Length: 319
Length: 256
Ligand SMILES: Nc1ncnc2c1ncn2[C@@H]1O[C@H](COP(=O)(O)OP(=O)(O)OP(=O)(O)O)[C@@H](O)[C@H]1O
Ligand SMILES: [Mg+2]
Image (cartoon, rainbow over all chains, first blue to last red; front, side, top):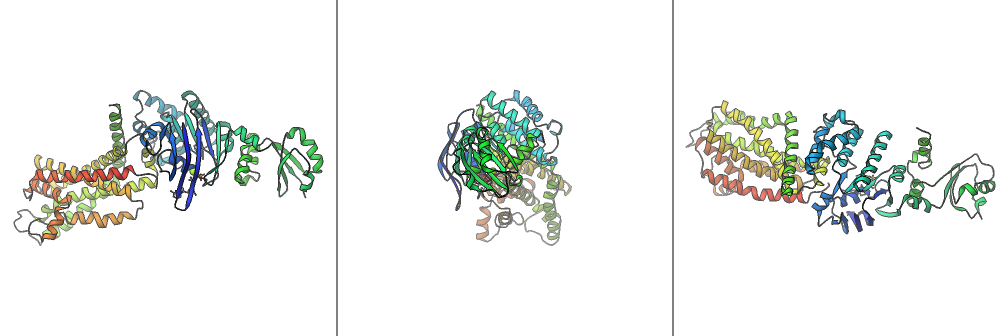
């Protein structure tokens, strides 16, 4: 459904997308992950015909994004990262405009409009001018609009950015159902790695315009090499890990160490006895955060201290 | 067939958006009327008190009225077109640019929106003309409206072309000074076309506004230099490259 070969975009001296080759099958949900400035939006902009590639090729729904622009546009729907709903119109007028631009069959317009407005809980504000909306409400309208015409291929650039957890959940449920019932292919970017893990069949990690890794979330997590054992200990000495075959790798921290351990559940006892006295220990399965760190050397949510860990602990505690 | 219908609906959708936005922004309508009124009342009355154009049986204020109406259309149209720079900056346009609608149709929708704005403005100016005692017959009204429609099409397309090619708001000033004012001053809006030095004569003939002013002066006062049908044909001819240029600008328009 989406295929790119050595797709490249240069802005002057800067190579924003650097020879990306991807293949995404029909009905697949594909996640692009990567730090700010990695080139995700630039890649999508080329696929949706807004930016001409510098070199390389890409097809969407079988149509070349340069030579067959109008066929590509007929096949796609887009939720932009930057707000693009019209401030000077009401929410409903924005959706009506969309329905007309996409020549949606008249019979379903009303029904769809009510459906998506209900989904994003904007039915009560639909007749207010968008300039009176809050940031999150605009985002929701933007999403509602993108979901309205059920395209063959849907591009969503950070669809849930800035939405509250409740709304995010509803949206993802709807998207998953939509993808399944209508066999829609979806390419999305997100900085919420747990969402990507739950939703995407495949993900690609992009850094500096290149694909650092691609595969199913499961596969990628497996490739991290095991479970993560985080230990707090004063004066940790790496020597004690020598000769332990089940230690894939470790990384010293200010107040301890994070060790990647194969079959942690079996080997924890042995590991701890080698390390000696500790303050605390946490064991967790590798997550996409670890995958992300492995390939980009960057952590999400630096403020969380432990790369998404704190965040996850908090959310599982029912925050 | 379904394709063309879809295209028409797309054009309508974009037109409708423009009209809704225009009628909601009352400030824009009011401010677009200030400039022409200043010309008519300050300049027209002031100069008219001291100047009599030979062989012209109408007072100067009346004489420049068609020119000022055309000027109002000129400014509104070009400004409207260049507004696209804003739209692109603020990303409103992206939604339209990825929609399955040919860029020519996007241009047509936008252009008709701009022309409608100009026509609304023109109707207000007709009321002023009536109050000033300018002879308005069904014939002169019809010719004037048609003229302004055509010049609106031409100038809005040109403005949209500039809006599509240029990417900074600063270039607004450039276009105003190097295109809009010259087009106005060389059009004969403020002076008769007869008895000019040859170079000026030539320049005025190359200016689409000349024919618009001539047609309306002809319809209102019988003071035309060319036959009116020729005036209209000339403006229509100018519309073709203008639309083509706008369409080209839109076809290559992407993200800024
Ligand atoms: N129009 C442009 N002109 C010049 N440079 C650009 C342009 N658009 C993007 N870039 C650069 O290309 C690089 C990739 O940007 P892009 O927007 O694709 O990143 P991203 O992965 O979407 O990041 P984010 O997560 O912040 O949205 C950045 O370094 C950016 O500065
Ligand atoms: Mg981005």
